[in-house]
Image (cartoon, rainbow, N blue to C red):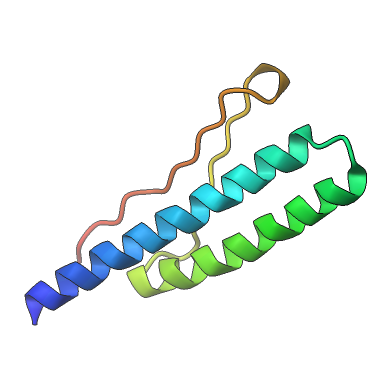
Length: 88
């Protein structure tokens, strides 16, 4: 039904947002981590989260999940966002 489709889409959007937020968080942690081995692990987690985000993006009809991480001075002021999805 249309109501179920709307609920499912909202769920998928929520999952996508969560994956992108996690990817952004891990990227920030990688940038500020002094230990190179830990920084590498954080970057691997970014890759994993982006794979997860790609799955939800695919279900939403998005070609790829856009991850926008904007760093301010010295790794501060990070923001993450996703493009809006228009209904067909």
